[in-house]
Length: 149
Ligand code: F42
Image 1 (cartoon, rainbow, N blue to C red):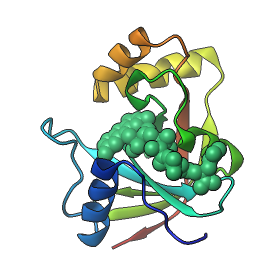
Image 2 (cartoon, rainbow, N blue to C red; image 1 turned 90 degrees about the horizontal axis):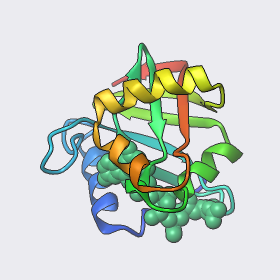
Image 3 (cartoon, rainbow, N blue to C red; image 1 turned 180 degrees about the vertical axis):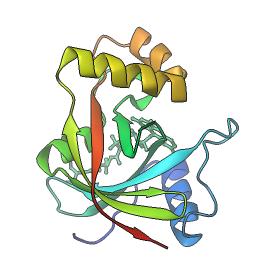
Image 4 (cartoon, helix red, strand yellow; image 1 turned 90 degrees about the vertical axis):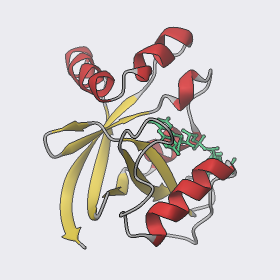
């Protein structure tokens, strides 16, 4: 992947920096709430640059549920489009790092099941869906290999 370009949102870039510099021993919760956060490293679809996006930690067994909520904003986050263009990601979950492949969920039953798991892990996702007209996309990230640090 290309050179890392940090998020223009300072609070996001700062959280990424804390997680990466501590190898996942710090910064892996959402400010104030204490709820767990994972870090998704992926490729920018236009620049080819390495992009790093913190998301809430929601799991289905060994797979991760990635919810493109962006706080219920009217448009999908840019990372959604990056993942559609390149399915290979790296996921840091605290001190563990996994190579994974993502798949957007289109089957209604599967979406429903994974959405319920995601909302159980992070209840505000439901508020975000309720306040936006778009259907919030969900990916599942499944493991292709893993390394432990
Ligand atoms: N966002 C979520 O959607 N879901 C979550 O569960 C979530 C949890 C979370 C927890 C902690 C935290 O710190 C942040 C959290 N966020 C969560 C916010 C998330 O990390 C993202 O910041 C947010 O979803 C917005 O994603 P975004 O990809 O739209 O980011 C914007 C701000 C951004 O970085 N824009 C870049 C820019 O320079 O404007 C573009 C980066 C990019 O990928 N560019 C592409 C490229 O090629 O490099 C071009 C892509 C194109 O099509 O233009």
